[in-house]
Image 1: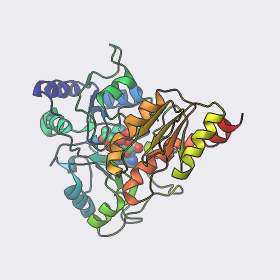
Image 2: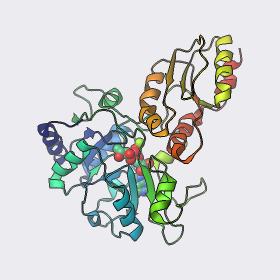
Image 3: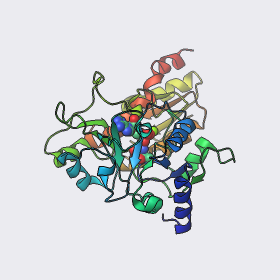
Image 4: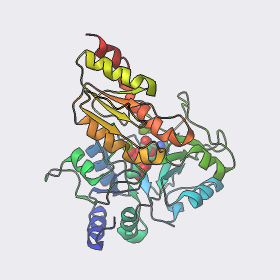
Amino acid sequence: MMLDSSEIEQAARLLEQGKLVAFPTETVYGLGADATNPEAVAAIFAAKGRPSNHPLIVHVAHNADVERWASHIPAQADSLMKAFWPGPLTLILPRSSHVPAAVAGGQNSIGLRCPSHPVARALLAEFQHGQGGIAAPSANRFGHVSPTTAQHVLDEFGDADDSPIAYVLDGGQSEVGIESTIVDLTRLDSVGPVVLRPGQIGVAQLAQCLGHLPMMPTLTDADAPRVSGSLASHYAPITPLVLIDSAELVPLMRGLESVHRSYVVMHYSSLPKDNYHALAIKQLPADANAYAHGLYAGLRLLDTQEADVIIVERPPLSDEWQGINDRLRRAAFESGGIVEQLLKR
Ligand code: TXA
Ligand code: MG
C-alpha cells in the first residue's frame, strides 16, 4: 500500500519540527521522532511510558551513510547490511560521538535499521533529504503488544487532539508481523555476534552470512546492553495468556467449561470439529511467516473478549518459529499457575 506523496511530505515536515509520527514498517508500526533532537526523543519515552534508559532503534534510508551513526563498521556489519537491508534486521554498533546519547538511552552503542516497507522508505527519503535518522520504537505503550496496523496505533494512543502523536501514516498491515531480529556487533572481540532478539531473519540465515553461528543471549549475559524487549514480561496482552501443547488443548478447554470459566483460543493445527464454548477461536496458518503476520492482530482481538484466559497452542520449536516462540513465552511470563487457579472451583 503506497500513500500520496503529500502525506509523506507532511509527515516528514512534522518530524523535522520535532513532532511524533507513527509510520508502518514491514515488521510492526513505529513511533517516530528525529533521532538527533533530544526533546523529540524524550517525547517518545513519555508517550510510551518507557524508562528513558531503554535505547531506541534509529531507522535510516537505504544506502544511508552509516558512519554518521556508528563510530566503527566491522566487516560483519557490512556483510549483514548487504544481505538483509532494507529489511527486518537491526544492528547494534558502537555509537558515534556526534549522536546524542538520549536516543541510545545513554548506551555507548546505537541500534540501526533500514526498513523495507515502501512507506517507511519514502518517509526516510523525504525526511531531511534522506540524510536523517528516525528513532522509532514499536508504537505501543510500554510492555504491550506491538501494533501491526494504523488502527492498532490509534487504539493504543487515541486519535483525540491530546494524542501525543501528530500524524499516523497508514501503510496497511505489516507484512512480517513481529519485530526485527537484533544482532549485537559491539562485542566481537570477546563473544562475537550476539542475537539479542530473534525475528523473521533466523539464526540459520545469519550464520550463512556470517560464516558461523551467532551467540544466543543467556539470562546470565550481564554485559549485554539493555534491551527492553528482553524483559521477561514484554509483548503481553492484558488477559493472562498460557501456552499449551497441542494434545492438551481440547482437554483444557473442556476442563475450563466444566468449571464455567471463559476462555479464548489461538491455534494453528486443526481442532476436532465439535461444539466449544470459547468466547472466540482464532486459527492462524501453520506456516511460520504467515503465523507471525497474523499473531499480534490475533492477540489484540482475543484480548478484547475479556476472557479469563487466552489459550495459545504451543508452536513448533524449529528455527523459523524462534521469533514467534520468543514473543509468546514473554507474553505468557506472568501467567504461571493461572490454569490451576481457574480449574479450582
Ligand atoms: O521491528 C522493529 O525493530 C520495530 C520497528 C518499528 O522498527 N522497532 C522496535 O523497537 O521493535 P522497540 O524499541 O520496541 O524495540 C527495539 C529494541 C529494544 O528492546 C531496545 O532496547 C533495543 O532494540 N535496542 C535499541 N538500541 C539498542 C542498543 N544500542 N543496544 C541494545 N539494544 C538496543
Ligand atoms: Mg517494542
